Amino acid sequence: MDANKEPQYSVLTGLSLLLAGLAVLTLIPHAASEADLLGFHTLCSFAPISTLFLAGAAGFALAMRNATYKARPRPPMR
Image (cartoon, rainbow, N blue to C red; front, side):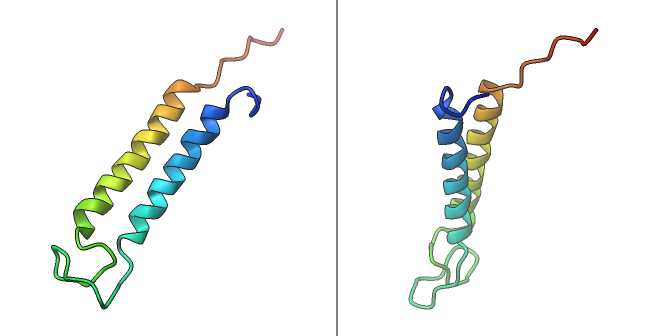
């Protein structure tokens, strides 16, 4: 697959990496924030829910990328 012919592949890969990075970012400790649902002071006060949502969205973007751009089977060699 040529990257110039399929820019959506790179866009979906970048989107999934961005969403995964944001999911990790929600768990970073932050003393000046309110306590999250588990009682910890994290960067995002909705930490467990937002982390799962962002991780699920990243997984969905990867699944869409893989389903859209499946590897074409090679013809058998003779």
